[in-house]
Image 1 (cartoon, helix red, strand yellow):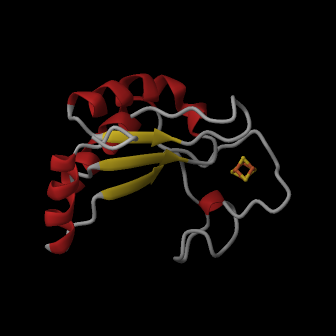
Image 2: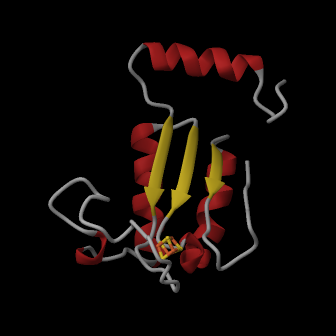
Amino acid sequence: MSSNGVTAREIVKAWGRILSGYQPNLSIEITKECPLRCPGCYAYGEEHLGADATLRSLSDFKGDELVSRFMALIDRHRPLHVSIVGGEPLVRYRELNVILPRLAERGIRKSCLPQRTTEDSFRTS
Ligand code: SF4
């Protein structure tokens, strides 16, 4: 086992999937909301989403709909690791209280990347 808790078996499994074109990491922006206004914030810029939309032009899903849509993405892409980002992801703490245990049940590693509204880092695995 490596220092970050990943086993050799998991590494071999991941590489096998990567070599067959699979992308093992998934990053999901669960909210566009953020209480901060950091100078240099790129989240709301025109380049961030790389498409015709900006973050401000989109609507957030909330509650059960957010949970079900989030888990549908997990089931479709079957990532080995998921990064939960925003905006400020802990704005959706109620939904995360449902999502995080479901990821744990599936054995999916996850990182929740809150911004400066909380402690410096809050990570789960
Ligand atoms: S915490 Fe992140 S999303 Fe919020 S304003 Fe700062 S850089 Fe932007």
